[in-house]
Image (cartoon, rainbow, N blue to C red; front, side, top):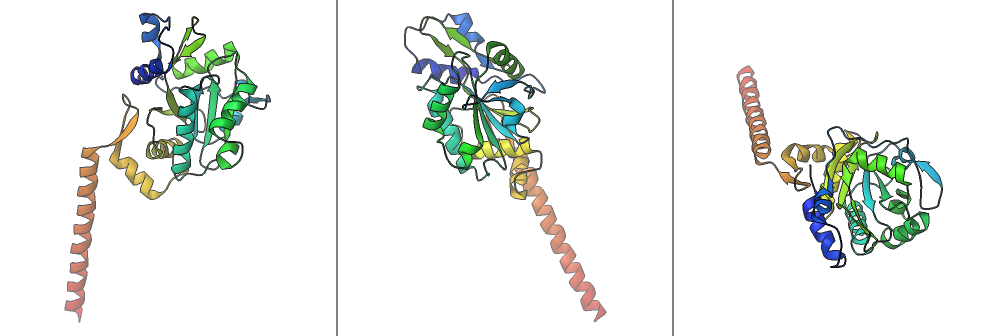
Length: 261
């Protein structure tokens, strides 16, 4: 699943025109999680308060939304995080109970102070979502382990001292496996809800949600959920068949009662 193209094009529009990255470096920017990708939850990072904690502690045994961001970038990272937060709040799921939001900085030089400032600006400091959100900072080695596990490749533009990177929202299972990689550009509450319910593996969501998942397919190239026509038709035929069978059964039951009387 390669989500880099559209994300990176929009990122280029947000950075200075004199960026010095060359074509091969630009082409290498991508998010392509390998099959059965899983982030190492045992890795230790620092949260926005400067406290060391493992990635597993941030995930807290819950389906999680994971975003990689540059804490010094306000042109794109800030709005993307704010958009994800808004979509999560509108998803109908409960922050802290049904999911966690985890952000990891892509620049090892940016630490807890910058992470704390971004959280305050884009998430806020109070409320259920803020309490269920952790912004983490990592050193070079730890960050490389995370990005390698995710198939996440960025490029550093030394001329402008900034990173070019794919803007992606990863949805993780409670044990750190990548359930979905969604496009962060235009992400909506429905996509996040469906992805988190899938990642929850039956632990969250309603029966109606599970029925919706049967009727929707995930487009990995676009990073969105779309109605699957063949699934909708199959579901429609199933409902019709059940209705007909129920109707026939009811008629047969009434007929037997009439004969018995």
